[in-house]
Amino acid sequence: MYNEPIFLLPVLQERIWGGQKLKTLYGYDIPSDHIGEAWVISAHPNGPSVIKNGPLAGKTLKDAWEDHGEIFHKREDNDEAYPLLVKILDAADNLSVQVHPSDTFARKVESEPYGKTECWYVLSADPGAELVLGHHADTKEALAGMMDRGEWDKLLRHVPVKAGDFVYVPSGTLHAIGKGIVILETQQSSDITYRVYDYDRLGADGEKRKLHLDRAKQVTTVPHRNSKLSQKTERIGDAIIRTLVEEKYFSVYYWELDGKAVLSMDQDFLQISVIEGNAAITVSGKEFSIQKGTNFILPYGIETFQIDGKASFIVSHV
Ligand code: ZN
Image (cartoon, rainbow, N blue to C red; front, top):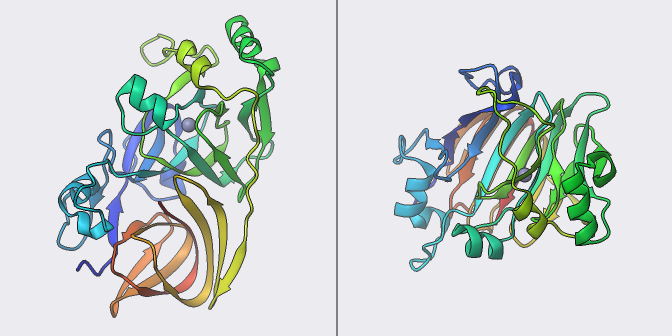
């Protein structure tokens, strides 16, 4: 049995809208001025995280999922891809307005295993920062018309956000992360994006990035529906555990620790990101120090573990 946390190295991804905050806030070693995304828990082929410790050190999370399924309590006959992906995004500029397909559409049209439902925990936001979430069109025809005519001010629904906010973004939701926002994103492990509007920006090559209006019109949910989330809170020891979402593809929690807590795990495995502070986690009598920017998986078979310190976490499971 694997009885220690599996610590992961982030995969840094350059983006035209990226900045420097993944270095200044999380200490990730950034090789460029425009790092937009850190894929902190990833088994996706476009950027799998590398394991730092234990018997699988040097292997990727993708290798571990494929060759050591017992770590995740994966059934022998399960040949699906690792289901989740956790990223931290630094939007130094507006991200393009986009939409992702459902599983059904992804499989049928893109031959990819998963569509993309995602959710965001806002880590920091400049005063006045806002997101695009949803639209104001009542019918598919109205949506298509406003897209074709470039009536973005009329079409897009803008939402102000601040640090600590949580946003659920089911597949089919038009969305964009606005300038000055840093988020931790938990999503289905998919990289299919239909770009709708890119502010007419030119890339490093002097070209506009490709748009995918036809696909976007097909997959966008009309009319927009706001998701209602029931957030509950419980206290275990010195930890406050807030459920942010419990939906079909994932459950996500915010843990706030100030002292000590002994927690039990009844899921197959947990994905944990430290977003603030310092702590220690003790598993099977072995203590590991963790701090802001640390990301790891607690593998199957760990029944209880202890956390000590003053720290905040985003935790998820399927
Ligand atoms: Zn997205």
